[in-house]
Image 1 (cartoon, rainbow, N blue to C red):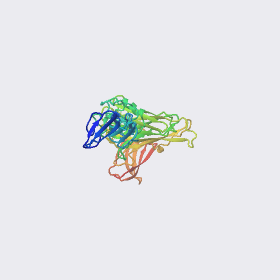
Image 2: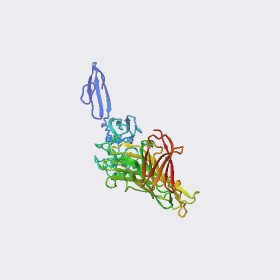
Image 3: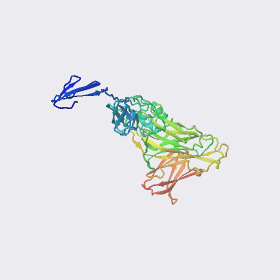
Image 4: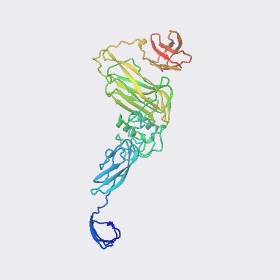
Length: 464
């Protein structure tokens, strides 16, 4: 721009205006003549650089909590924005971890300080699948067998580029959801697009890995019972202990359940734990039921799950599994001649086919272990307090009594004054139920006797 008014302009380009537009590099000069015929000249060297080009990486989708690198082609300097969940806004390939979908803008400058702009969009999926976490509670464990049972045989879109590795994976939503609102794609642990037995293998592969949360329904003694049952007072080292795992004392409608069994690993052969489901009232393995067992011998814990696969609840009560463990061959060096082994149940989850959760109450059992070769004097029947089971205790509206031996007994119930309040025969039956309507709250004794033996247990009747 020559910038002088009322003058005549002569550019070396042939232009005669006060300013010109150029497109090429070169030396440009102009001669200016004013109205008094005075002249002057000037020149300018113009360098025209090619335009800068900025091109980012492709738009992409990540799982909530993931970190990803975004990038741009090589520039002399960089300026990314916004400054939200980005580790360095002035590098070529920053790491970003947005908590919601976001567009990141880059202004790139080349060696000639020419700038250009581009945008990369990161979409955040808030419902990614973690292979093996079928119920999306943040951990892969035996609880994840239950949603597989509920949706067994159902199909939906497979997971793109599916992997069974423990990492969040984007998966298209299936049409159906569980009663909780969770999409059934989570139960497709393998990502194949169908829920079946293969998904249980993924649970085992990633067993115990976590990414957040968990919880259970609280229970009280009036709820249904899940209990361990040992019909032996004592056992020798090296022997196999069989523990019945029972669910319910009255008819109970369920679809599946998961729980853990605990024991003292110092008294049990490592790796000897096994579970037999052949007499389970929940179902039949390979026909309408699948199961999962994971033992942690060093911890003294076995995780167990079993669920139906036919989308139908089942009603029943009693034995659902038999838990087997082998006693250590040697418990010598201990102060006592014997050791007591407690078999406990914990962390239960009982569901119906609509995924509704049932409250459950727990009871454990125990057995005395003696060294091989040690003489064991038979215990008086009056001392065999584990030869029958009371449930619940404290009791509210009814009391269940389960006897170990199928022989005739006389059943008596005494109040805390020693007064007899019930007397009835207990003949060739394993279970009886006492209605507690009209009974005062307090401590009572339950006595089972024959002509030569007597067993006594205490029970509390709670305020109802």
